[in-house]
Structure formats: C-alpha cells, structure tokens
Length: 133
Image (tube, rainbow, N blue to C red; front, top):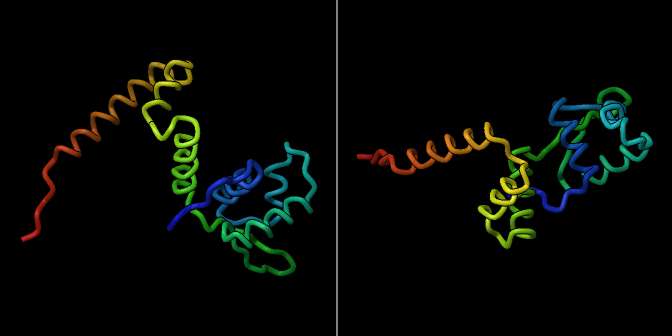
C-alpha cells in the first residue's frame, strides 16, 4: 500500500495523536493539540477532510465519532523521509546523513548506534539465505 505524501503539519500532528491513542474523539484530539490554539471545529473539519482522503476512519459511539488512523506510522515516515531526500538531496540518502553529521544534528552516541546498525545490516546481507528443498 502506498502511503500519503505531502501531509501538512496539522495532518501529521493529528495522525500522531491518533497513533498514540489508537482512537480518539474530536475533543481528545483537540486537547492533544491544545498548544496550537485551534478551534475544536477546525480539528473536526480537518478530521473530516482526512477521512475523505482515506487517512482516518471513524465509528459512532453514542453522539460522538471516534477516529482512528488508517495509515501506518512507519509508512508515513518512510514516505516523508523519501520525499525529503528526493527534494533536498537529489535522491541521495548519504547526502542527508552527511548533512546531519556536519550540522551537529547527530551526537557521538547516535553515531556509534548508527555504526552498529550498519554493521548489523551488512552482516545480515552477507548471510546466505536458506534455500527451500
């Protein structure tokens, strides 16, 4: 399944709130995003638009709708990072990593962790796959 592209900041914040809660009423999403100073009706409208795009779904519980995300967080992350790499780094993920290192966005402990992950990926790639008889 292809994931969403070009999510706005508010849409992403709403999805995060739903991923954390599994499902939530409009009022709960509004409360989770209270630092944005948005009206409850703005959140309700955005949830309706997101449902039209297939990003969320709702079920009725009494007089309120409970919303849940229909998109996987890892798929959204993958698509957004892919778009970032394509748009800013000409499709070169190594250029993104180099930028993060040069800009000091990655500290030494994170670099060590990254080295371990690379080594583990290399080991897994070199391992012969089990053939079926």
